[in-house]
Image (cartoon, rainbow, N blue to C red; front, side, top):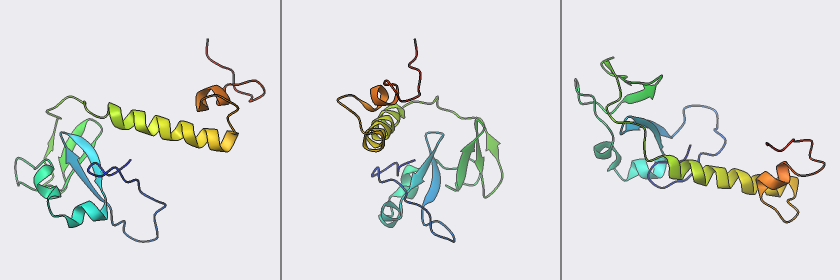
Length: 123
């Protein structure tokens, strides 16, 4: 999952605590990279707990929970706005498959389902 502000992706984590921060924005879990955390504007953008005003929230199993006071609530906003990120991830995966599988004049999906690949195309 990329940083919701700048789009940079996490690399393999080192041992110890991650410098990345989790937060909730419009009832969806987001990650914040160390660079964007340093800007200081992130806290104002994130959802806040209605009970204690904390931004230390997590979204899981269809609920939003405050990790400071423990209040759990149902999401207010329907899931929207993440389709573009999903598309960019799909494109990134297709490019990686092309590099690894060696696409012969086709897209990653075509290369993965092509003759001799061992993958049966849908249909």
